[in-house]
Length: 235
Image (cartoon, rainbow, N blue to C red; front, side):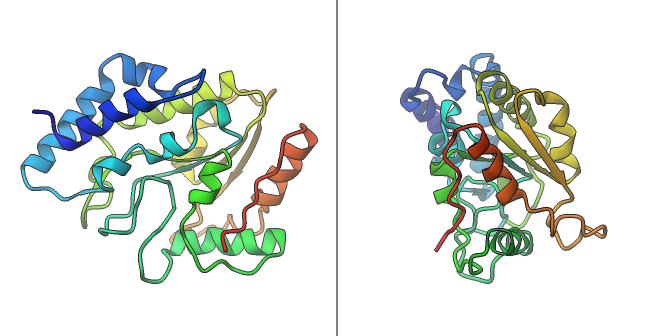
């Protein structure tokens, strides 16, 4: 009997809709997805508490199909506290204070477009408008940040960025921090807008994220290309 992440992978393959499917990427067709899922299922069987819940591991791909992507934001790995992560990069459903990086992102958004600082950290609204919120690793273990960064998820991120660049006509890529910015080489800048900045983490000593106005710049680009802007407000 297959494990819960393998079952979630099967569900994704069965339910993916649209002319261009994420599940057509080599990561899914060549066995890599199955191998990663099997490794994670082995960890679960051994007693590891894997986050987010298996049914939400592929949430970013479910909520933002490939042919709807207008903006890409790359994160690292899910929050390692149960109840916080739900499959979208930086998005937070916990009951405590907003995580520091997300708080910085939302403060920049509020200043950039002139709205109040949102109370919610749930970015589902962005995802449903075509903002792909994809982590470098789609899973983590409770209290073990970065535990799954080397399991093979990064191949999915590389392929997803390349596919969006190749197949979508006009996309804004918001690359924050070193790991995200390394993927700029995968993007066709003749078609797309790439906005690079430092990571919003308070551990970023350069403090080169605030003031970069990525949200208004993204919307201006989309509007110039005849596309509907993103409503970044969360409340």
